[in-house]
Length: 432
Image (cartoon, rainbow, N blue to C red; front, top):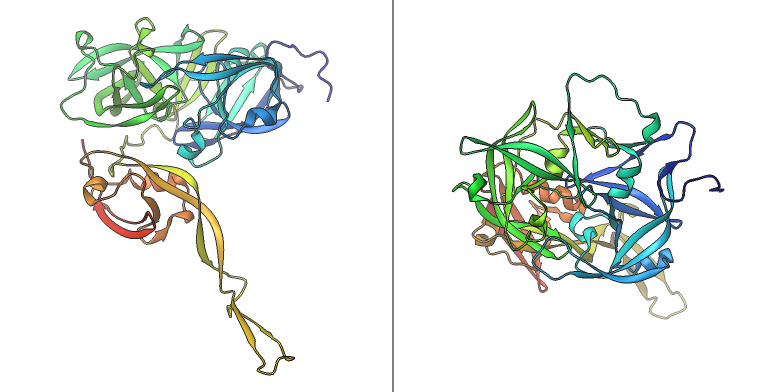
C-alpha cells in the first residue's frame, strides 16, 4: 500500500467519500474499537478523557509492535497510588478503518494491574482519544453500535429539531461541557469532563460551598480503576441532571474520595465527569475543530439508572478446566481389543465427556455489609455457576448485569474456594 501524499501529522481518510463507518462493541458502557498499530490489530477503548494513546503492556504488546524512538516517562491519573512508568514512542503507524496516521505518538505502560481485559471480559489493549477526535469529526451512534469518522471539510450538519448543541472547553486536550444538576431541590451549574472511558453515569466532586454533596442516602463502593490505582467513594442519586432541554431524573451519581481525584480537581472549575452510562443515552457528534458537541436522544434514553445490588465485582482471572458433554459421541464409549493376548483384554475409554478450557471469573471486590458479603462470600472466590447455570455459558458482562436486576431477586452462587466447592444464597438489595 502506498502512503504517498498523506499528511504525516494527522489522521486522514483514504477513500473518495472521506468518511468511514466502523462497528464497535459496547462493553460496560465503553466503546471498544479495532485499532491497527504498525500492522498489528488490537482492541482499544475510545476515551475522550485521554490525551495520547496508551497501550497496557501486560502481554508485552509493545515488543510485538516493534515500537521505536522511545523514552521513559511517568504518567499520572485517577487513584491514590503513585505515577506509573511508561515508554513514550514516536513515529508509529495507526489505522482505524480507512483513517490513517503515519507518525503517531503512543505510551506503553508497564503495570500488570492495568489490565482492562480482565475487567471487561474481552481483550482490550489500550485507550485512544484526543488525537483522533482532533483530526476528524466523530459520530458515536450508541443505538446502532457504529462509529462514523469524517474529514471536517466534507462534513455537513443535518437539520435536527430534537438535537441539542453545546460549546466545548478544552484543558490539556480534554473536552468539558456545562450542565446542571438538581441536588436537594437546588439547581447547580457544573462543568464536567466528557469521559467516554468511564462506565458510570456521573461523577461529582463534593464541594459544600457550591452545594455539591451527597444526600444522606448513599453507600460506599468501589468506583473503578485509574492509572494511579483503585478509586472508592459514595454512590447516590441526584434529583435530576440537565443538558439544556434534556432532563434525566433520579440519575446515578458517584462522589469519589477526594484523595483519589486530587490531581483531577486541579483543573480550574471542574466539578466532575460525564461518562458512558449517560453518554450511551444519546447519539453523539464530536466536532473538536468547532469546539462543539451535538446530542440526540436514542432508545437508551429512558432506561432506568440501576446499581449493583449484590456487592460483588468480578474479573476474568485466567482459565479453568471444565468437564462438558461431548455432543459428537452419543454412546460415550470407545472400545479397543487386543486379541493376541490370552485374556483378551479390553480398554474402554469414556468419550461422553470432554475437558475444555473456560474463563474463570473471580470476586475481586466485595462491598461491606452487602448481600454477598453477609452471605459469606469472600474476595478470591471463583464463581462456578449462577442460579444452577455454569458461568462459562455467560460473558462477564452478562453475569454482572444479573447483579443489577430487580431488588428481591434470589441469587444462588456455587464457588471454588481453594479447591473446596461451596454454595451461597442471597437476595439482591436496593440501597436507594
